[in-house]
Image (cartoon, rainbow, N blue to C red):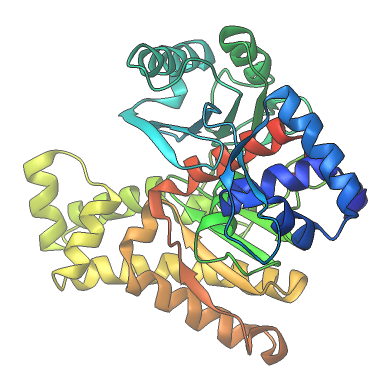
Length: 396
C-alpha cells in the first residue's frame, strides 16, 4: 500500500483511477505504472474481475512474448454529477472514465429551499434514467454554493442558501437514489474539475477563483483539495476589504463579495444607469427593467467607459485579495472561473496587474493567472470526479 499525504491508498483505487484516466490498459502496463510486485497486482485484479469492477477487453498489443490482456472499467458504471448554483441546476451523467453520457441544465433559485431544489434534482435524474441513460447510479457528486461540512455532507450557515443550514443533502439523495453521495462546496468541485481535465492538469498548487453571483476559491495543495479544519477554507468572498463598506449577504460589512460579483456588479450598473453616468446602461435598463453582469460586459465590449471602469474596479479589489493569498500560499497557478469570467480580458488584465505589482517577484515570476479552460463545465467535471473517487475508494 502506498500513501498520498497521510492516507493509505489501496492498489484497487490506484488501478481504477488509472483506468479512469487512461482507458483500457494491459496487465503489463498496469504493473509498470503502479510499480508493485506483479503477483500482488494479478491477485488484486482477479478479485476485481470477480466482483465486476473491471472486465477483460481482449489482447493488448504485443511487447514481445506472450500477449497481455487488456483490462477496462465496467462499461456500465454510471456517476451523476450535480452542480448547484445560486440560480441554476446542471447535471451530467458520466461513465466510469468520466466521459459524459447525458446532461441537462435549467434555471433554479437556490433560495427556494432544499426540499424544492433537491426534489427537482431527483426528478431530473429520474428523467434521465427513464430516457435510458443509466440503469443504476454508482455514486453521486454534488457541489453547493456555500460552506459545506465535507465529513457530514451538509451545508453550514450558507449566506445565500436560506433554509439550507445543516440540511442532510448527502443522506437525502443517498436514500432517494440508492447509492453513495459526496457533497462539497461548489468552488472546491470546480477546482477538482480544472485540475483533472482543464488548464491545471500539470499543477499541484492551485488557486481556483470563482467569480459568479458571489466570490469564492478552491485551494489545492500537493494536488489535493485543502478544506481546512471544518471545510470552509477558501471562502475569500467574505474577506473584509473596507471596514466601512456595504453590508454583505453574510451580515458583515465591507466584504469582497459586497463590492464585486454578479449581484454587486448589477447593483452598481443600475446605479450608474439611473444617475446618468452611462447612456448605454441606461438604455438597457429602460428597455429591460433590470441589468446583469452580462449587460455590463456587452456595454464594455461596445466601448462604454463606465462599464469598463466597473469591471476594472472590481478586478482591482479581487487582485488585492489574491495578492495577499499569493504571498501566503505561493500557488503555482491561479485560474479564474465562474459566470463573471465571461467579462474577459478587461477583468483578467486588472487582476493580473494588481497581483503582479503587489506580490513578491519570487512568488509571481512563474505564476500564470488564466481563465478556466472548462468554463461552465468545471463544476460537473469536478462533481463526477468526486463521485468516482468515492466509488473507487480513494482520496478526493
